[in-house]
Amino acid sequence: MARVDLVMPKMGESIIEATILKWNKKVGDKVTQDETILEVATDKVDSEIPSPADGIITEILYPETAVVAVGQVIAIIATEGEAVSDKPETPVASTVSEKVVATPAVEISVAEGVKESVPVRSGDKFYSPLVRNIAKEEQISQAELDAIAGSGAEGRVTKKDVLQYISQRQSTSPAAQPSFTTPTPASPSVAATSSGGNVEIIEMDRMRKLIADHMVMSKQTSPHVTSFVESDVTNMVIWREKNKEAFQKKYSEKITFTPIFIDAVVKAIRDYPMVNISLEGTRILVKKQINIGMAAALPSGNLIVPVIKNADSLNLAGLSRAVNDLAHRARQNKLKPEEIQDGTFTITNVGTFGNVMGTPIINQPQVAILATGTIKKKPAVLETAEGDVIAIRHMMYLSLSYDHRIVDGSLGGSFLKRISDYLEAFKGENF
Image 1 (tube, helix red, strand yellow):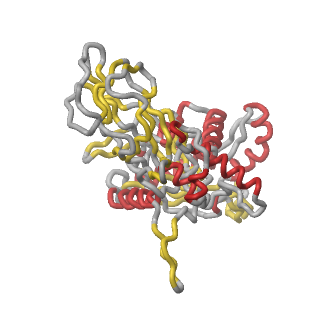
Image 2: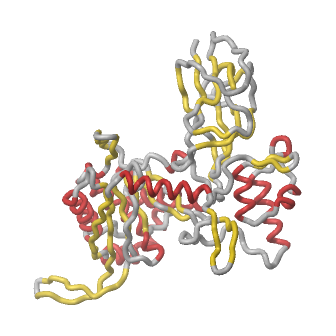
Image 3: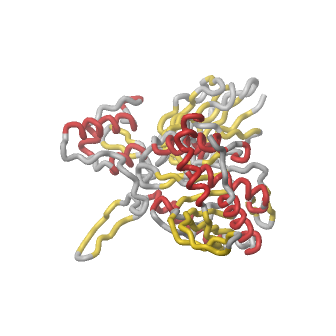
């Protein structure tokens, strides 16, 4: 009785298009809800797209190998009572009554460095952007790639096939370097195009171009202001050192500083809810959920921002569990698309790299981002009942970049100071 549009879903914050690898159904085929209709690939994701409803496929609007923008209608499903169209399986305009975005079943790939935006054929073999990326990251020649036996449909080489080949190649070559080594965020994956004299020319890969565009867009959209505060986190450091073993024994989770930072941010957002917002033109959207994004390094050296949803509903143990789980699955490339979306505030730990402070760029459409610096022992003046004394304390800088269109210096500065106050007053549970 109704027509349902199958829409190319969004599979990550930076994903703007996907390539159709294979249609598992054709026009006239019956489908049931959640049955796989097609397979798609992006430079970060291989995904199976399920049917959002029971019905019959009446139109397929894009052929295999087509690159389709996120949000575009790719097929039309007629529910009970609709007639099947005789239109060809090519892009056409259509009139629909209902639009449904499919939820993909995905696996995030380790190959974050994007090199290809369209699928590639070599001879009779088809290679998705994902496979091409991994091959370039691991310096697999075209001849080697063509020689890999594919386990996918019609002999297609999958990510699993490539990774298995890499593993076998490393085990037989003593000089081979281990794949996916320690991240080097300062050195994004790039492809050299030419060199001469004392200059090497390097072409940006597509992911780096997307990141660049996103950063420029953020700076052009939001007038950035960054405030700084120095925080005495001695109590926090001593508590963690004293209780980390007992904490892990009780909750079966390691306790890092990150969940403590998140806990302080959540409390400060409760006090200053106008930081947990976004803007649409002149409309202020105040978010009722507190969803905290945390930057995590991927094995490729790139960063991804998994999001802890409803962080305000979690205690320290719950935050630790969420942080550890998301960080672990980020390193294992097993995050789901919905786990890197809908953040309302972001934290980035520049102290991981030994930096004392930073001026982070806002993750649009959010209006603020916190950078936590490295914790160092420093002499500090303490006020006591007997007078001022100098003591060795654990000190760190916090820096908050915020959108000065809506967050002024008073709000931004007060919010940042409140985070510092919560960290300095941290006591935690005693075991």
